[in-house]
Length: 67
Image (cartoon, helix red, strand yellow):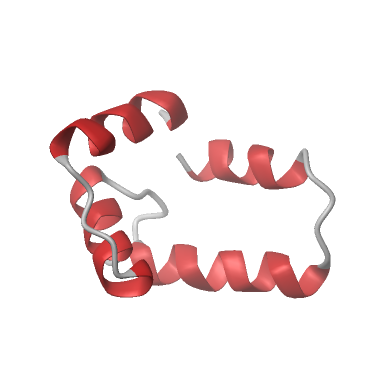
């Protein structure tokens, strides 16, 4: 997932500040510290960082598209 996220980020034009913010959010969401974000970590991150509750279907769609 990390590689997919970096590829998506790399394919768009963003500045270093934006990239640093994305990396910080990624580290927060990767609570296990293994360099990967699982569906539980993703759901927790959306809830804690963005204040959004993802449905199981939304989680499934996201994970299928980035894994």
